[in-house]
Amino acid sequence: MHYTPKTRRGEETKEKLLEAAERCFSEKGYFQTMISDITGLAETAPGTFYIYFEDKLSVFRYLMDDLSRRLRERVHAALERSSSRLDAEELGVREFFKFVAEHKGLYRIVWDAQFVDTEAFTAYYEGFAHAYQRRLGQAEAKGEVRDLDLVALSYSLIGIANFVALKYVIFEDGDVPESAIKAVVTLLSQGAILPPSPEGQSPRP
Amino acid sequence: MHYTPKTRRGEETKEKLLEAAERCFSEKGYFQTMISDITGLAETAPGTFYIYFEDKLSVFRYLMDDLSRRLRERVHAALERSSSRLDAEELGVREFFKFVAEHKGLYRIVWDAQFVDTEAFTAYYEGFAHAYQRRLGQAEAKGEVRDLDLVALSYSLIGIANFVALKYVIFEDGDVPESAIKAVVTLLSQGAILPPSPEGQSPRP
Image 1 (tube, each protein chain N blue to C red):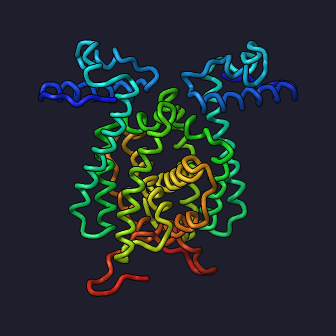
Image 2: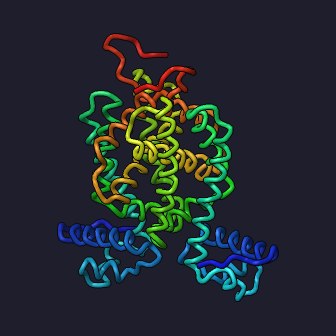
Image 3: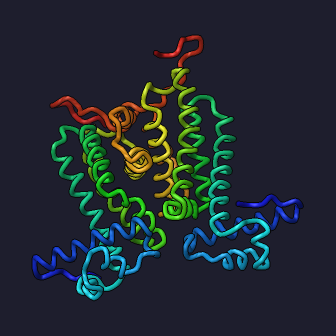
């Protein structure tokens, strides 16, 4: 349960608490975080927390929803500029990589949800996957997506974006190189694993 | 730090403790698990734990290594039967899906490692990715893999396997359907997102 602030100043305080919660949950994890850690980091009085959130679980759930909503809005805005489904995929992963760079605790928070709130964890990915399946279905009708199991395809695409960002943005703490974007776009549009070359023929250059 | 048992009975006890640790860490998470939960579930005396492991962190690290080693052995054995790189990819994901079904706590344990031991978390995926890059490089030399950034490609393939299993094996608690395997194999070999069809032409069936 969370409460909607009535004033601009209230909104700012709620936003400060949310940013502090994002940092605490991603640095220490949900179970090691105390509400006093959040209010301390947000520089608000300890009791202020309860004006906006009922308890620690409420702020965690609100944060998960908020991250999911922001990410979808960002990706959706990026897709507006796309000229085709393939173009949309490229713009979408680029925007996702940026979002992960701005929210480096994203995986820690979302994956911690497996223990905190299994339903919220499932809902997080199912929400993205359903939206993805809808868009892929529309593109399939236009001949821009192969006739394949769209549930499996949506999770494959989510997996690619998540693990490529995990490698470059989280493990390497850097940008995703253009060669990696090219690898992803080629995989999506043409595949990457080819049938074996006929015997006796020299390998492709 | 862990200790190698000298007797068959010692090996069995260590194995029982490890199975109990896997269950506790996946159900409750690392931080909520006490060593007494592990020894209780393994039905050993509380002090027995320390014959095999120095502390809770030691058994967690040992378990991560053990899961990683078992998974690699299983996938490696499956690959022995493959006739081409594409065939190897299919056999590899099928074996991975089976492994996840047998170790349903895998994601919980591995992703919890983000908080428990960041280095072990990174090493877990980097270990798979390096082995993958080596095999993809060999296949590229034979013309069975496109000339692409193999780091990005390895993480893309790991991401696909992980998220397709997350959907069907974890969220749905079932098997991965053949239509999903077909979607993955088609994506890998031919791609799934096509260039837009020329204007005026009707969509493909």
